[in-house]
Amino acid sequence: MKRVIVVGSGAGGAAAAKKLQGKFQVTVLEAGREFKPFSINLSVLEKLRKTGLFFDEREIQLLFPSMSVKKTPDSMVMVSGKGLGGTTTLSAGNALRMDKGLKDLGIDLNDEFEELYREIPVTDDHWPKWQNSTKRLFKICTEMDLKPAPLPKLGNYQRCTGCGRCVLGCPYHVKWDSRQFLNAAQDLGAKLITGCQVVKLVMEKGLVKGVQAQKDFNTVFYPADLVILAAGGFSTPVILQNSGIECENRLFVDPVLCVAARQKGSLQNKELSMPFAVQREHAILSPYFDYLSFFFHPSWRYPAQDIVSLMIKLADSSAGTVDHKNIRKKLSDIDQERLREEVRLCTEILRRYGIKKDDIFLGTVNAGHPGGMLPLTANEAVTFHSPKLPENLYVADATLFPESLGNPPILTIMAMAKRVSKIIIDKNGL
Image (tube, rainbow, N blue to C red; front, side, top):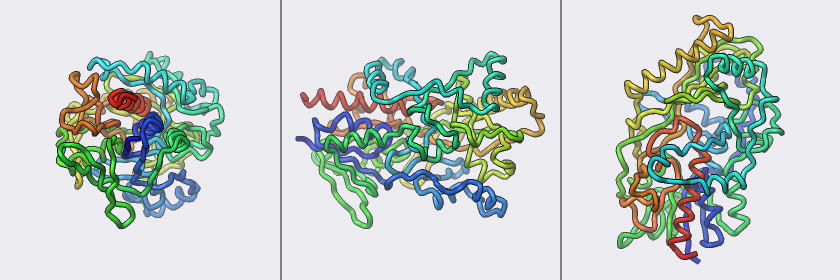
């Protein structure tokens, strides 16, 4: 049986591992460790916040090692998951199909999405559990003809307890994350190695022979007949570059900015993350309690239960890049103008909520959906394989997206990973 190494245990890696195990001997290499939800009482941290101890978003990693936070030279905050499940454990659990850009290339993932819907429970009738503030925001957006819609969620949200910790790791196993696909792959015989940071590919005569990784304090070679990179939009390009494979000089990140105000008793900190959304041409708007802004932005000095917030997630341009040293990313002029436009709309929504314009404040610009540095083209619609890659090397994460989604990408990444896996299976006559 041929050996396959999958690098990364997030949406793409876990989906590929589950699909391939049994037809191949799969080994998943994950840089992080076992994921544990953030367990510290937030009321304690809220008191500590007043001391001024929290002054840099990167400090969160000291309390929550599974959340990786980096800053660009321009101080944009970049967030990703580091641990089993990748960033799926820190996501809002949204099950949106966002494949228009792929369809434009001639890629039809209908079968893969249908397969995912059979494998993963999806909840879209969680609205009876919403806080009153969320219901009011939904009503206002409806009255403004913004066509808000409840967001479908990965998991059984009928069991949601309203703890408000979706993006800190669901402690009640309500939200689905990719660890469930990992468990299924392991049940079929897949191997999982954690604390294993893949540095580069090892190649010989134009083919990949395995990967070189740091495991604890040792440099280890893991042999393979085929490698799938699914380490995420920040890490996959770096592994490729370290291996002498150039990516494109482009990077999108889906930047997030929250528009917030003090509203006594809004209890948005007890709401499921992103309960509904308004789809805009270049962004998505959704109620969202932003923990990074709450702990580190001076304007968010009010009690958590008294803040109401609307998130803007922008489909940004691809101006940027990443290498082993830095993430370089700036919002272009058009990005900034589009962001200002959405801030104006959110301000009007909050004004109709009954909040004075002068009482509205902004949060920290942060981002967590990197991708686009090895984008698929129409020429690769069938193969899902860039000519830059050795024939036994594939990519199965957001690095493949041709453009920013400005929307939650998990479901679409998993669909792409399933397609990549099917191509590999067919190519090997299995």
